[in-house]
Length: 365
Picture: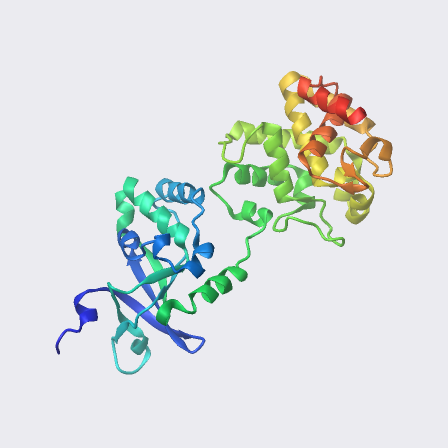
């Protein structure tokens, strides 16, 4: 049989054929070294009506590329979804049976291919391969749709992104075994009895009926403040242990937390009536703890007993309005966390920094 033009100048992939919305689609495994060559992302080539939705956020690319380079034996990339503006050729392995949808997919080199989902992955793969050449021999799945004149591509982009849901921070923290902060948060929850019993592990907010008092994500943020760590800083075993010791001590001096642990008081009641049952205070306790340990490294545990002197009641608006509360509602704004931390530091006998004093002066005006 004579070769057709699509056979002579084309890319061919092992693929599986399927149907979505009455149209054939194909899933193929593409060597990553070919991804930058096949899926050329040039905004000048993209029809004007599609450009706005396909602008690359270039700040995301180095992060993904670094992830691939740092984890060559343990990374995961989801499929790229692409539209092809010409008919493709599919040669099945058999005429009947299951193998009729397994075969070789041929795509003309002259075809215009638009990425509906995965343009940042494509760009990151290109960058990563420059440094880690061996990644080019790995494969990434590509889902091809045939879209004559690319008329459906805009709607496909909208549909794919409309239903994408970013996982909440607590469940990301629970499952992320590469992130040092997440590892530390899980360690703290596992080693602090009060947290272990009262922490919501896979949600970043608590319902009114929840029996939990904290979220894993809030413990992560509070513990990062305690250790003075940014999101990507490494955290060693000694630091994780320090965080667990600190929160264990704190729990001993907030009786309401212990009562909730023993189920002597409703967590819903605590959230409704006390500021210590919310993330703003947890983070403030972490920030205050960082200064306490830094300035009083030998006596910080004893100093924590002064936490018992604090009236945590939301009804005490003279103390909390403008600090943890704004117009009667809890606020996680940076200034509110800092002001709440200032109050805790004052009770713990920790001198305020010049910046903290300035914030207090402004608050008291």
